[in-house]
Image 1: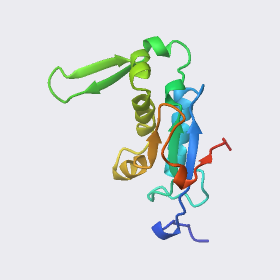
Image 2: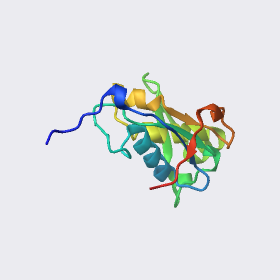
Image 3: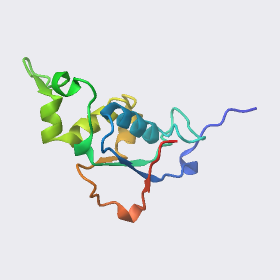
Length: 143
C-alpha cells in the first residue's frame, strides 16, 4: 500500500466561522490552528497546505481562565537594545483583542514559510460582523 500525498490541485478549501464568545483563548486557538493546517481532513499531508479558511468572530469576548487575565503578559521585542515591550493580557484584550487571538493562533502554526501561508487564511474580527458572506462560510461545530 502506498502512502497518500496530497497535491495542490486536489485540495478543496472551505470557509469556517469560529465563534469566540465565552471560549478560552487557548482552546479557540488550537481549534483554529487545526483547521488552518488541515488536520481535520483525511487528505492531511504535513508538507502541503491542505487547510481551510477560518473567520474568528467575537474576539472581544474571548476569556482567559484562572488568574491569567491579571498575571499573563504579552511580550514583544523591537530587536533594538532595551526594546522589550511587556503588555498585560488584561490591557491587550481591552484595546486589541484581535491581536491577542491572532498571535495565539500564529504561535501554534509551523514557524516556517508553510506556516506563513496558512496564516494568510485566518481572519479575526472583534464582533460578529465580517465582510465574508460571499464565501458562504459554515459555522464550525467541534467534531
